[in-house]
Length: 106
Image 1 (cartoon, one colour):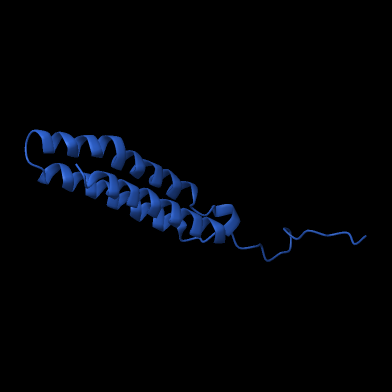
Image 2 (cartoon, one colour; image 1 turned 90 degrees about the vertical axis):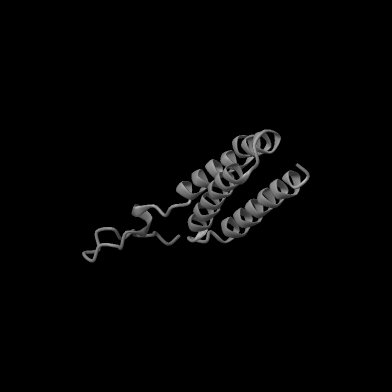
């Protein structure tokens, strides 16, 4: 049980650092980082539950998975989807010039 608080704190701090670094730069790879962190959190929750001993240790592992790791994984998955580049922004401009804007000089 003692290991639960530092691990949760590390996960939250890592998520905050990753989000702040990638969002500050508007890095297009931030969706990959969030998706990888979500996958690792799900695998960690699964591993903790399947390798824990019966009774109190299993109850602790399930509680940590349900209350901490899986909600954080869901948050990371939402951040990953929101950070996906839009197809309209990444579309190459038309070569016929129909998408050019004329700026008036004042």
